[in-house]
Length: 136
Image (cartoon, rainbow, N blue to C red):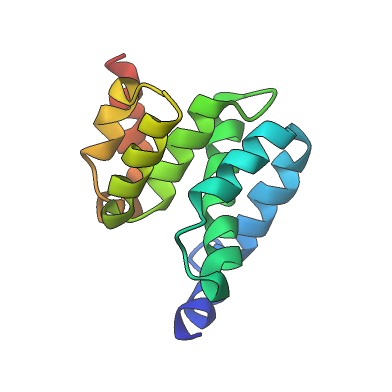
């Protein structure tokens, strides 16, 4: 509960973290297809039910933010996986790797994102994200 309260405190730009999450979700709601929504739901299954909606909102907003940054027309599987990695702590990545392996999805293109922890993304993650993508 306290974390949710902290997310509602306005930052330097006048918007809170929750405001930005809602903004990115609203701006990209039309980009989601059933297949990607199903994959997102599958990926957040291990989160306890009490916290699942909050986790899904946080991750979906990060995916939406990336989609807007890249000028995407729709949420793709690759975009979803990148956003999931960025939006979750490193401890959750083991489950993601296992789930992607079960679905026969190659994790090699996502290795640079796995090497960075969520804490690294919290501080100046956008510039680090650009650096990783420039190397591709």
